[in-house]
Length: 260
Image 1 (cartoon, rainbow, N blue to C red):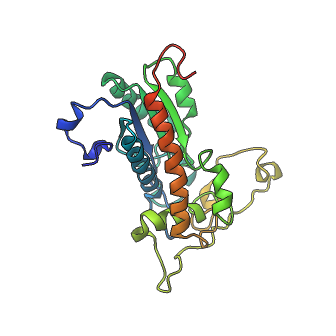
Image 2 (spheres, rainbow, N blue to C red; image 1 turned 135 degrees about the vertical axis):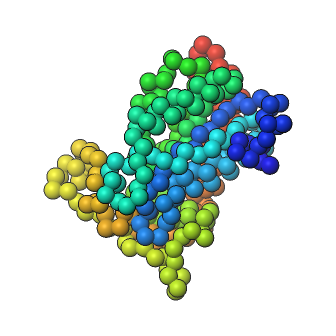
């Protein structure tokens, strides 16, 4: 039993344990090029969260990892077979209910660990602010948490099922990564199409990108330079930073000026 993982923990332990922080991993169910599993985002969230919570626990922080939510917002992938969509408003209601449960059980700090780019939770944090005793925090691990190290670890930037995600897959769920007989990835090159609008292509204006038109086989970013070593190196940085935050959060008292 790993006591920082709720799904593995029994009531004999939980009823006598004072948890300071809960962590909710948010994933998705969607295709990731031809080589990564549909559960990639959820598997990444679980791998990151379990390791960060373990390190924080071993440093004295009483954290609990809630079961991962394996669905996310996929409206732009509705033409990609068995990409399973849950609308933002529905996800918001689910998280609201879980927050109410945590508040009722006396856990007043929650980190949402998001592993899917289609999930946008900042508006939800604003909506819930002041309506609950639970203080909410959000980490999109693939954005700010790793922005300064991605250029050092990976050869080229990617968006979805590219070098970064494939490296994590090879390192932490390699048995699910499809390979050719010669040991190369069973993936295409993740080439994406440009729109006819220059402002969109340059990032000045954003849209919800129709994934079946943007990509060939749902991959955005070339995965072929990925290695398990790169995945482990990235995980080391993520766990160090995230566990440090969880320790700080657990030790910080909530008062009228929290978190300032």
